[in-house]
Image (cartoon, rainbow, N blue to C red; front, side, top):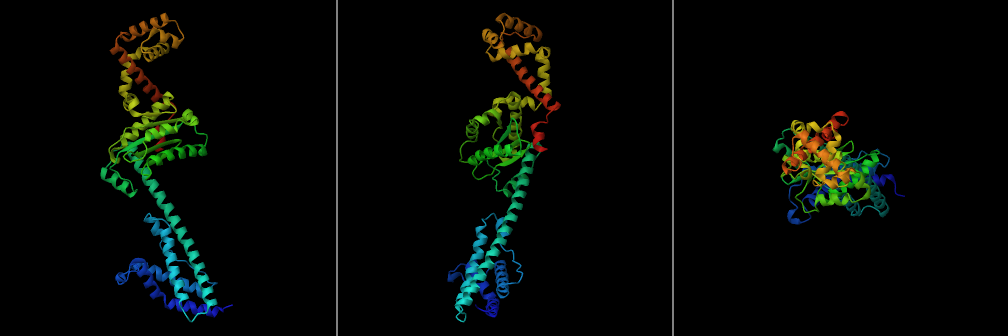
Length: 413
């Protein structure tokens, strides 16, 4: 068994060769092995890191019982640069090979001493790689958390409807590696009921799988709270269409019975995509109120309801001036709604309401008398249909005011 004095002598020799080894490492790492580039000036930080590692390795080699303080080198930097952790590990392994080559090339060392020294160097670099991995992971997690908060804050600002500065939005998007000048479309998702955090996590994962298929570069901004998810997704890529993908997702029997999904209109860029976010949330509110599960409710399909939902005064005035006299007569409101849905067919309306056709005719005369409308004129029927839509919006808002916060409040809470 080689004596400790032999390894101490090896450590001393390695310490004396630290500067030449560091220079050689920098030449290979930063300047390449091409002799034509060997005289290039090496980056100072690479030389300093290499020199510090070599000296620490020599100290560990000379005293196996010593408490080694492993230097932190490239792990955090690689994470901040968005590079894979393999870059940091390979950097260290290259330096390890150079040190091992130095030991193997010393003719004065016996084979047993070289074997033991190389084994100690390998253990040292194994531990150093572990420290680098921990440094990378810690920095990566902190960076991911910071990027997540930045993305969440950016989306919240767009949803709020407050005026935004396009330059600021674009700058924050670029920090997140998002192209702000491509089209974006908002998607809002909410299950009918969430049984617990694990249930919501399963739903969220399935929705995200769809989003990442459409957006493989993961440039979407996402916020989810209280069983509600809002995603602002780029639509200018080459991936499958977002609406068809969501529609196929909802073909699942379980999701078709429990999931509400809505979308806003595409916006030309990120800075003006707040409108799409608010449209998606309004369309989702309407889908929930009407029980439209298992389908993607697009803003254009409920555009009148969305417009009325954004202007309460107009909604109330339409109800008051067109069907205010019917509000306290639910049987007449139901008859009017079914009559319009049945394309003004008296017999079909009677069958739907389970009453005699004469009863339907009598109720229609009452509606005409109370509203001053001719139930045979298309223009009058159209006005009454709009009024029923406005009534839905007013009642939806009343339900929210009495017991539920609106979706935007839930999201921003």
